[in-house]
Image (tube, rainbow, N blue to C red; front, side, top):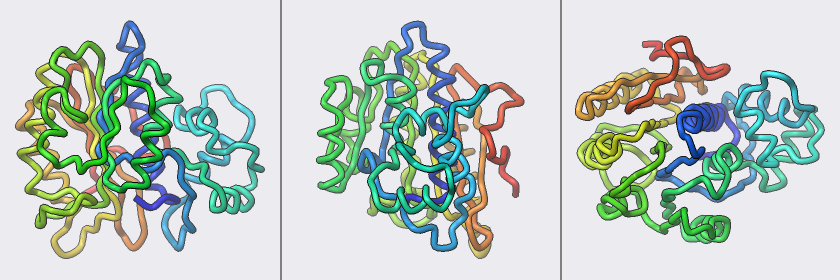
Length: 289
């Protein structure tokens, strides 16, 4: 996804909160991760170009300042990942620095700061050759498998493969995917989530749910509209069916994008759950439809 808008904040804030929540339930502080859209470890941040970006830059600005009591987990993660290394907290200077250097971290790097490299296991898929090469260089630890592949390739979701649940999983798990958007039609492009992905996702997640370990599956889609076919409602319907197949509870979050569109996050919980009153910082809880 393009860097530089509140979709990044939504995804990374939720992922970090989920990782911290799961780590607290792990006696050895380990976490097994499956990340379907790896991206490069660090990227330049794009020009906002009218996108909603206030939440992201507010968090980055806080991370560029001195640590404070009761900081958001995402702010701590941005600081530890060097996302704001040597930046003036002034928003204008921060934007110019981020646009000129590759400092904005992907999900894997943020999880590394939260959990620690040697406490992570699992896999990452990335189809782009250059990005995969950077990922493979960043993750030489044998606990993380980095595959140049679409997440849809059947073997990647199979038991014990890159994204599939290990046969004897012994740690909490986080399965996270961030396609660009959701569509009821189509089935071939790696960038988007389609209705036709239901069966393969359900099969993959069943392995994790049946493992007996607590875990969270997080699905993010971006710039989703409510006009015409109303893809917001269609995505929530997809999440409801997936949760029904897995027989697990779900929660929903969103932030504004531009032009009335929204960035959406659907979470599925197995043997764990956020507290009933929990809302990720600066994010809307529920579906708002």
